[in-house]
Image 1 (cartoon, rainbow, N blue to C red):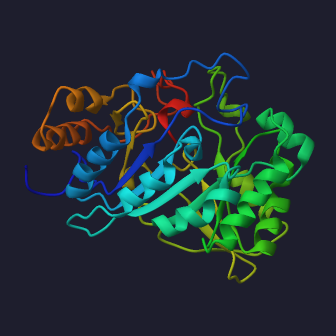
Image 2 (cartoon, rainbow, N blue to C red):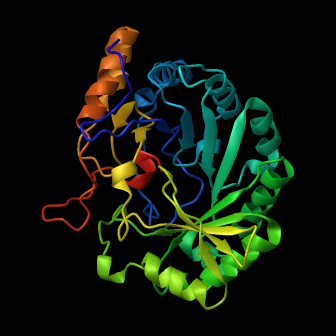
Image 3 (cartoon, rainbow, N blue to C red):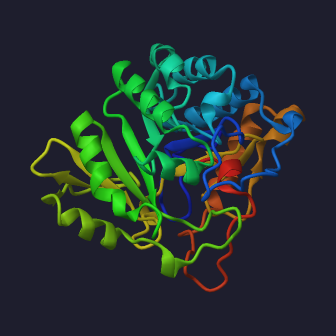
Length: 333
């Protein structure tokens, strides 16, 4: 193994691995998936649990200290509790990794407690609206009560804080940012808003129509006293204390205030492709290496090759920028 941290050519040390457990989802959010005709990854192409855990073990051995499980919807994977337990038991030079998950919460009433017992440390839940009719239009499923029940189940199981993520869309839910913060503060959750990124299935994203971090903060500033928290390190969200605390609100401004310079994340797709950036146009095929009998040294070398090729930034807004061919559901959030 090559000694030293898992660093790219810009000196960024990588400690965070996002693993997509499946590209399937129980919702059809308009900014993520088409209503019908989603081209699912074929079953044989998907990583088995032993393959997934082996890749993660190699990564943890290279210094990765955080693993977030994503999708699609990760809770649709039948053995998700076992996956969490096996990942939480890994050990490396930085100790055991912290395991977190981004989910739509629909299966959390049944799984929140088993997941916490298995070693899941944190939960992020997608919640773009508190209006039931709007939720049904946005997700193409009438499941807002079930989502709220899942969020409550996560809190009852001891996850704290439960983080709520909302993609803010002009003319769709931008009028709800204050209500969403009030809801989160009242229940002890942490609200985080996300600028809409060019990852939509129809490739129709328009920067001019995007709701910016500045607009979000302007709306919130009329209802709350906001105090910036300060240095966020490698975290994607900038955070503000709400009305002297303890509650905070975050904004992930990937487009207007990119944090590429401190990015420490890699992504592993459900079919075993390692990506150095959400917007990468190239991937490193770990699945084929595994299935052709590669040893751990070859996997370690592939990790380093992937990281070495990471660009300085995602390139949104630059001449020649192109969306990744894969939709968000196939990359993993």
